Length: 504
Image 1 (cartoon, rainbow, N blue to C red):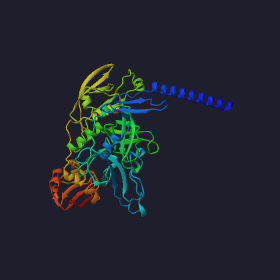
Image 2: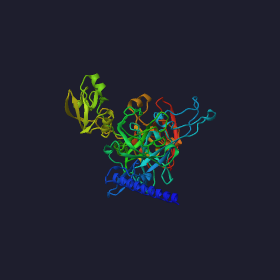
Image 3: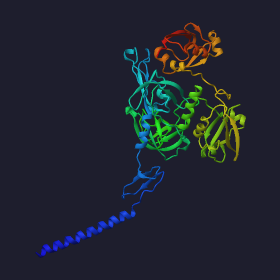
Image 4: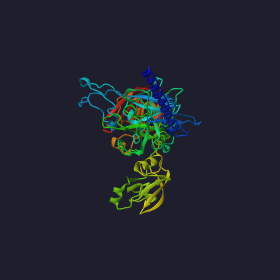
């Protein structure tokens, strides 16, 4: 009996001690626990020792754990899947081959095909993404998603599919504008990408690796990045860098802020394997807006140019040029009679800002100027021999003038899927023909789908009627129905006829 009583007393002591320890521990937790504070940003809260939870505040100041469900719901309907088909070509003694692709290092093989029995290759199919930007069915994507395609098909989030018309392309920024005929489309607004900050949350939305309507989250890792993947002569690269996962198929998809607005078009990834390894790159929305406006208003992109050769300043360059280091862009050469030359910019100047916007790197300077058109005037601040100087520069076009060079872009041209230029007089004289219209670019449309025409073909007759300029093509085809016969020559003098139907 005595032993049993001692045991009970011992357990009472243990139980009492445990209750005291529990109470003390609870009190410590309550004293050290931080409460989330209302903020428009993100607050880190130590809710339980050893764990970290992210909180954010809505517009009413209500605190809630950070998630991306509201943003995802806003944007998924406005991001589409794009399928580009390049029809099989005729026999080539090269046999089976892969099409060259300057973006291959970043997105792998976009088009693949084989040539069975050495006779005909199967259609090559590439996939990507796009963003619906208004209720008229205009869709922004990457140029490399639809380049060389004969047909482009767009599939919406609800799985409805439509044939797309290519309105225009801009290889210098790797952007393209499509259009579909559909009703009740969900759209996405573009915002000022200059307001995007490093460290800001963003979502990448697209169709990677065949996985439709995929959303990934990350932050803006850097801005004004150039990764030198665009080989176009006048290429503009000033990418938004993000660690949101981007893979093949994300090309042309959306990079959005937490308000569900478009801040960039996903374009490339830095990878040694062809898949995501940490960094993706998007064309900023400011460049996207300018390109779209130009394609719709002028038929092509109007690119204002300073007329200088540039390098980003750093300590090594400053030492090489024997100048004090100044953050900005070093002017290596100035083109004769360019806008910069006429304004007084000199080789050795360091451009530190344009219109009050700092230009710490060459890509940032390119981005600012890419938002301007020929004839626009900009205030360029340069550091010359340690002193700053403001100069007003009138931007020129690629031909050295200040005029807007508009490309005729009529509805029938979209149906044909082609860009045209009046035949150069010297070439007309060489070919001994009295004018004509040259096909400078082919897109998915009637010509590519129903003929074997190549770019460079010179149209001299339509249905036997003489064609001397672009206006003749428009007047002869705008209201025409049924079959059409195009007659003309290539630059080597070979004569060809191409027939197709204009009925939808």
